[in-house]
Length: 200
Ligand SMILES: [Zn+2]
Image (cartoon, helix red, strand yellow):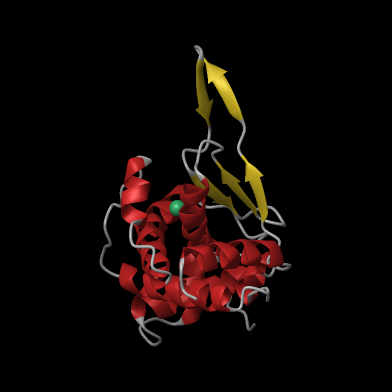
């Protein structure tokens, strides 16, 4: 039951039911050499449906593993939310790498890191509070794959960016500092420049 074919079936089932738009990235020739603006795969949350772009030179298997990685980003960034800022992306990337490896192992796929390394993708390694983020990613994506015929909450498009930012600030507070270390309102103000707190 828990093998690579099951993983494939569930990943594509989930992408389908969550209505992520899976697109081949365009290739172009520079000095006679084919280039692609996407090295491996990329999740772009700002559109609705959100887009997953993949480099068309990937094998089916490389694409499958890359999609698991992109789903770990997706579970923190619902379709229609703000696009990644570089700083956020840099922090999240090692977590996605680690989480995808753990999720793949559930299905007996133990060479995620090797496959990515062959594509030139090397993890930076986890830092201080990254373990909590990895845990959240693994938990969310595992649950979604286990019921891949149901659209998970985290893939529900954002209809109110303001509420989404407040919820995200609260989640960030929980993961990084524990529930009581700082008041939510302070955090919202610091992160998003909000002048007052909101109930949601
Ligand atoms: Zn990534």
